[in-house]
Image (cartoon, rainbow, N blue to C red; front, side):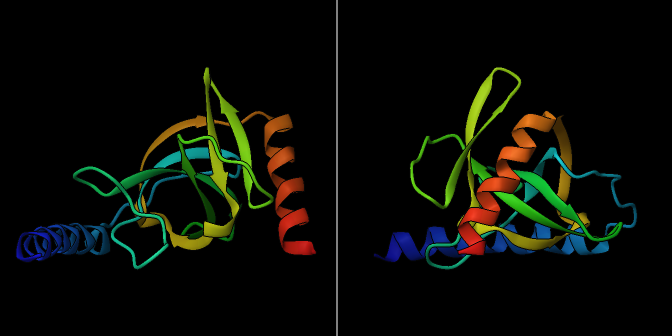
Length: 136
C-alpha cells in the first residue's frame, strides 16, 4: 500500500509539473473539427480517463471548436468497446473507440501534436452517435 501511494504521489508531481508548463504556454496550436490530436489529458479521478506516458497524453477528436482557446474533445482508446456510449473510429489504417461518455471541454493549450484528420463519413458517424447518446 505504501509503495502504491508513493507511486501515485510521484505521478501526481509529474502531472503538476506538466500542468504548470501547459498553463504558461504562450502559443496556442491551430486546430479544426474532425482532427485527432495527442492531448495532455492528465491525471483524473475515479472512472475519468487518464492520459498516458510522460506527458499524460491520449488521442482526442476535436468534436466542436468553440474558439481558438477551447474545444469539445472526445478521448479515444485503442481498446475496441461496444455500447451506446462508444463509437468505432477508423483513421488511417487504425481503428480506435471514441468514448462519448468521456467528452469534455478542454483548453487548446492541452493540445500537443496533430495526428490526422477523420474523413467526413467517419466524423458524421461520430456526430450521429453523439446525438443518439445525448439526445435520448
